[in-house]
Image (cartoon, rainbow, N blue to C red; front, top):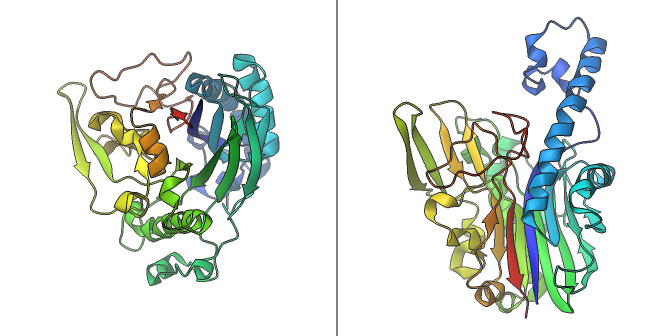
Length: 370
């Protein structure tokens, strides 16, 4: 008996407009920045037109990427709300896969932009085994003080002991698949953002992700027992916004590209992978073929990295020792630089930078639960 699970950051599935770009140039879309706009009323009209025109192609590509996962259960990040998810499922997914994901749940987390995590699932697997939603538990309310995880390194970020740990949520989803218990921890950790306080964005925000990772481990060990968690069926799915290895890209189209794997000295993932607590099964893929995001700030700063994870409990990983996840990269923009041998056919209408399915790639795996 098996179930196919995927995680995907679908990049700003919004059902509202963001007008903050009129007063904050950092939030303004680059297309509008080309034009002289006389006042806020005109800006709002143009932003609505731009967002709507851009959304249709983008969401067709997003739906194609989801369809390609062939997943029974979808763990999603950057969903505005349940209404946005329903509209996307009916208007886009349904046209590609029919009536598939009958069950869905969206958490209202702590993100200042309102983007949340969500889960969608079929009523049964492709093999016909029933998928039953037993319980959904939000941990968005947990504070640093609650878990004793406050670190003075958080103070420069204006974070206090009574603030909530998770920037979005750690959504605990209890399921039964063919009668077998399975628990999913759906996460979306703090983004790296721009540099601050003399540090680059990753290092500056690392204390938040370290706390989030420690909190997830605490939740799992409290639920199952620190000495018993390894023997239970659970997995952590989502966008951890961090990496412990990446692939630096050197060169250009004329001289040719070179790809250099490097290891990081520290990562928030260490807290979840240390002492075999969980296994990142994407690491079963070749070293240059684990990336789920292409990062660039121009020709002088480019790398490939894994931000999207399926972290399995030791028992689940051992039972599925031969399972290797798929990474769906057909919706990546043409600007993304692929190592040799990894080229894929892009979905129709994919652009150089946009439209695209997302800045992230879906990751999917089939797991045996017997």
